[in-house]
Length: 226
Image (cartoon, rainbow, N blue to C red; front, side, top):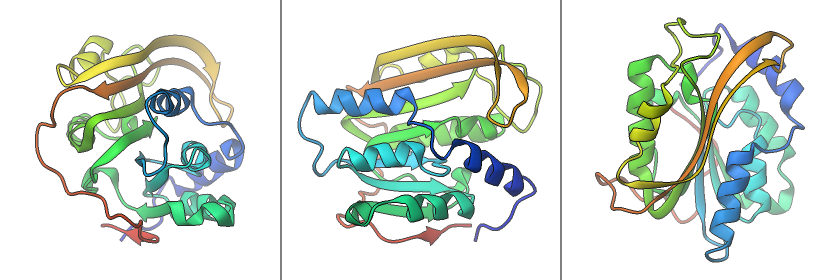
């Protein structure tokens, strides 16, 4: 079962600062691209590393069913408390370490700056697992740190080269949105930082590499994993 971690206080402060910020552009683009195809009723998304729910909330407002996953219970509680009563049946939350979470089959898997906080071997294992969970015609929306980020060298994180990251999507996915951004910026908690970030939205155009369990038709309430 997940519990307090050494950086739980850091994430609590991060949620306080970012809870009212809009959803990231990647998830908004994914929602819009699905909307061009057919109504969102019945669509199912998994939000990995959901935090306090800035992306999950956007999906709920668009009529999606959402499984929001994070190791930090404080973020999941904020998301649950801020979800309007009329949307609560669309939301399920689950406390888990991303490295051990089995991603269910989904129309969309979203991971906004959550995977980079895994060491490299775990990063690629989770990345391949989430790609395998996406149904034909489904999408991934993700944001990761690139290999020119100031944080490169931290063994507990992963910084990918843009060509290697893009190649990991081939040939099963067609890239619909790609941003390779470098900028000197200020992080959410006030630290100056040279950031290298890669944003991607991609659609599965070929069959999955392997089977994965289907999501229940009715989401369950909050759960936990080791």
